[in-house]
Length: 466
Image (cartoon, rainbow, N blue to C red; front, top):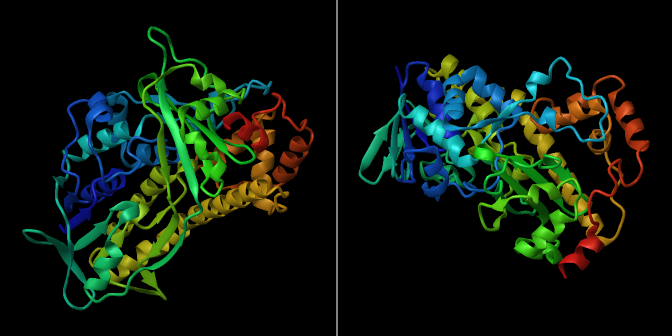
């Protein structure tokens, strides 16, 4: 049995801790935020203070790909979510009204996940992990302990050292690991980072008193010329509505104000129904969230051994696509697999986790980053008053699926696959004849789409919020 320390007690840190604890290891989780999970799921939303998680009360979704990870590897967490009140969210039932063939098809069972806000997700994970691993909250890790040969042997705490056979960095986007590594004489991780400048404005709603949840319109993320709308269901009948824009488009900063936000959503026929509720929150906002990846293996060798990164500490992406939790759970499984096979050999462990990550998760990260860059370029073209650049094959497929999914049930399902982390767009593009079919269906639709004009263009929006 080995001693493993996980630094960071958020969703992915606790998931990783649970997975390696199943192998019989002694696992300690060190979480800087001092407040433990509250007594009830409702209190988790209302009073749990998690300053270490910047987006704790913003819109969240566990994609269907992440739900599959829970069902296969952490079923006890899935059970805890259900018991805590998370409902089922089946995006396949949200077909646009313009699709005529609404009959079920084999494979539709994939399109199910949980409807839950971030506090409920973390409540379920934390209460489950508390029974299996040692969680120390209010623990302020200040650095790494090493053997002087770039082998990490523990962590530094204000009151001493905690030794470990392995340290796993689950500190997220703001991980201090690069500075800690250079402090022990190791090289910093190789890093690539792009702040593409997305800005997020949104709020949560609930049904009016005594009423059931209304029809929420088109769920998920939908792009317009210079903004995107994101509508997601959550537990207890609540839901969120968010607007995503570019920080470079300064004239749209007015959307952080309730009146401008409401005017925009109200002007989008397929999204306006989501405003038919009582606000649970005021306006919420987030910005300056980069796409970033850090590699602990450089030129074929680990910069240090005895330490691994997981989840956002390894790579983080634009939240509007909702892939962070799902990618983190995928990475937790990869990390646990590498630990199971190579813990006794620190160098082999580092190389194995890096190899598995590159094989299974890096393609998802790269696909997401390419899509983010394309979206930013398209918005910049609209703002500048010039036509967007001709799309590459993958971008063209995503565009055609976004149009064709409004009328074609097969394209709708493929679009869901790409949005819900079940299949990458590149994999769908490789299906014989599919891209041609999507292009044909998209080309057959009127410019405004089958449901009429979906929302204001930039010029109309500027007049609305002036």
